[in-house]
Image 1 (cartoon, rainbow, N blue to C red):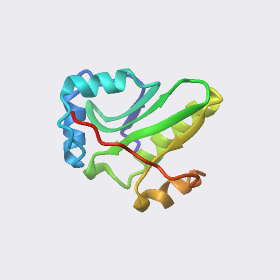
Image 2 (spheres, one colour):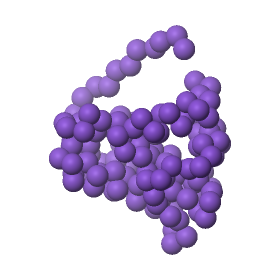
Image 3 (tube, helix red, strand yellow):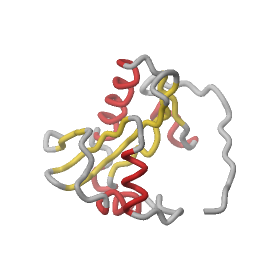
Image 4 (tube, rainbow, N blue to C red):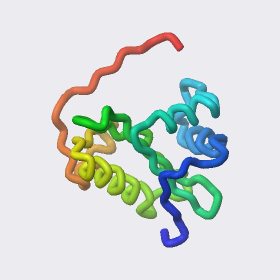
Length: 134
């Protein structure tokens, strides 16, 4: 992981994020490059992981900056997974929340519960969503 560079500076080309999302099967909403850029730029905090100029990971927090910060969109390119990149990004997002006295929260699939519990997260509620026409 010593070749990985973590930064809050967004990629110059958000097509890389589109490729990352598609590599994970995450683009069911058919988001455009511009929508992904807007999503990241409007987040309260976003962290990016690069291997040289190649985007290999991203995570972001949506928040009012006062009470709660929702960690979302944590992703790592499949060929870079299990190398500590996601862990480093989560730790940096938690640290950003703590420095700003914002409570970090997240929603995840059941299969990821133990991963997030390793960072001190505890299950506390039922998450719900409502489908909309896009």
